[in-house]
Amino acid sequence: MRLVLDACVLYPTVMREVLLGAAKAGCFEPIWSARLLEEWARAAARLDPAQEAQARGEIALAQAAFPKAEAPPAPGIEARLWLPDASDLHVLAVAVASSADGIVTLNARDFPRNILAEEGLIRIDPDGLMMQFWQERPEEIARIGTAVLDEARALSGQDWDMRRLMKKARLPRLGKALAQ
Image 1 (cartoon, one colour):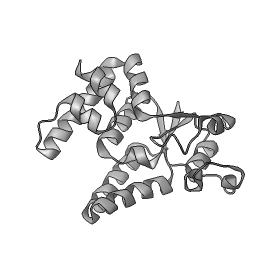
Image 2: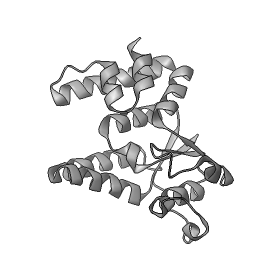
Image 3: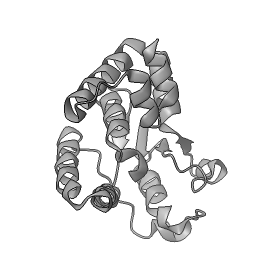
């Protein structure tokens, strides 16, 4: 399954690490554009200018881990597309141009399912996607969750538990499943 990762799921860190962990495990093939990666870096810079450098380093690592993930939209494709928020047209254009199966986003309102269906695409939220993967490969997803939890503990110095970390990362159903 080929899925475009919207900028809102590439940043924040925990959500991205869970999704990319699933991609590394072969659950899906991630797709993004240079523009989506730039949106990630700008979002980090808005929170703290010093985080932009860290974000750009993480972007470089993601690009190295998934060298085939970056896909440009086909020239002129946006002109024939429509979404409620025109600033999201590039995401849809990348999905169409790369023959993706869907778009992973938290932004349901701006990616109506009926419009995506016209292009042969689905919209899926990251928690729903990860729950699907957990149902198919529980041991693999549990390993990914544990690795992300260990990294969060190491980087933050806080004693996170799985459920609380995943809830904070907007992956509450996954957190509940992994905490059992």
